[in-house]
Image (tube, rainbow, N blue to C red; front, side, top):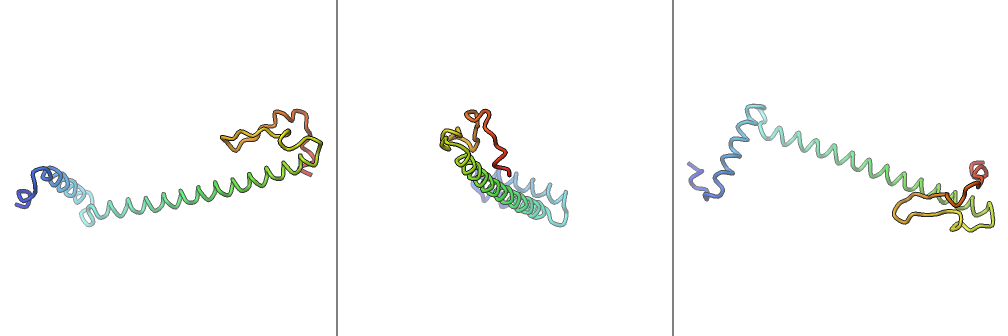
Length: 112
C-alpha cells in the first residue's frame, strides 16, 4: 500500500486527505473535490470583482470630496477677509473638515 511508502510524519495527512476526498465524492459523485474547488474559485472571483468595484467607488468619492472641498475653499476665500486656514479646521487623521470656527458664516453664496 502506498501509505507505507510515505514518511510517518505525512501518513496522517494523507489519510485525512483521502477521507476528505471520499466525503466530497459522496456529496458530489461527478466532480467531487474538483466541483468544490471550482465553486470556491468562482466565489473568489466574484469577491475580487466586488472589492475592485468598492475601491473604484471609494476613489470616485474621494475625487468628489476633493472637488467639493476645493469649491468650498474658493467660495470661502472670496466671501470674506479671513484666510482659508482661519475658516477651516482640518483633522490630519481624516478627511473631515470642521467649521467650528465658522459659526454664523453664511454658506448660501456657495450653492448659488
